[in-house]
Amino acid sequence: MLGAIIGDIVGSVYKFNNYRAKDFTPFFHPKAFFTDDTVCTIAVADALVNGKDPATTLREWGRRYWKNGGWGQRFALWIATEDMGPYNSLGNGAAMRVSAAGLLAKSVDEATTLSDRVTEVTHNHLEGMRGGAATAVAIHMARTGRWAGEIRQAIAQRFQYDLTPSVDEIRPSYRYNERSQDTLPQALTCALEARDYEDAIRNAISIGGDSDTIAAIAGAVAEALFGISDEMAAEAWRYLPAEMHVVLQDLYAIAGQPGSVSEDVSS
Ligand SMILES: [Mg+2]
Image (cartoon, protein in one colour):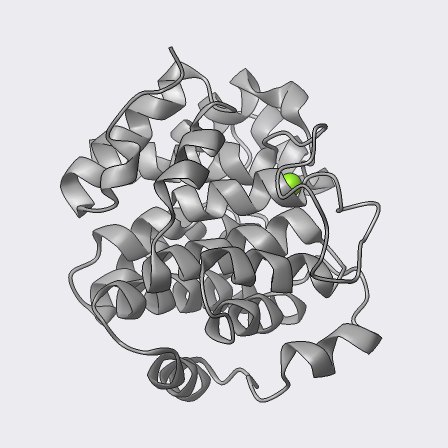
């Protein structure tokens, strides 16, 4: 979950200014900030950990951090409109916010069930539901010790995504796209091909497109595969307000790992 948040922060400066290589520096750009991907990820965790209504919780967090921006047009309308129901979204917002479902699930089926519960309130299109569930299942598999090749095969079979193109094959022709089916396979590949957490984020930025969201999805899976260094976790922690620290601490207290977020270094 912190993996998704770091991806969002690192990618925030490249979303509308793509940098199509892995050598960007520094890793945390001076102008980096957390965006809607972080706000929604925290909201979903708050809903699942504390048994709250997902729609209400997403609206509360969204309104409170409205100025952090990056909101999709229809999602912004949904946040602002109290009685608006699910709007059949096939956007990548389902996958970018769903990490807590993968971390809390005790089985592949539960990962899907938890993902569906928090996704159907907005992204009830087949592609939205598929993107959220595939991300949650990949996270669950990674944190229960499955290796990248197994995850790639299982996700391709269960969710019918083509995960054969490599990061180097994706990069030359990839263009900005917010559809789930044109984001999730690429983001997953960025994580599954990586040698460590940072490498996954560098893969994600390097293909261009919707960088904060691609890095958030790749980062969530990469955290489960590799863990995050204490230094990087501490640096990310400083971007976040105290009420987000509380949600992260509660989530990890239930889900376990990583020890690196147990200390509040924000002072
Ligand atoms: Mg964003």
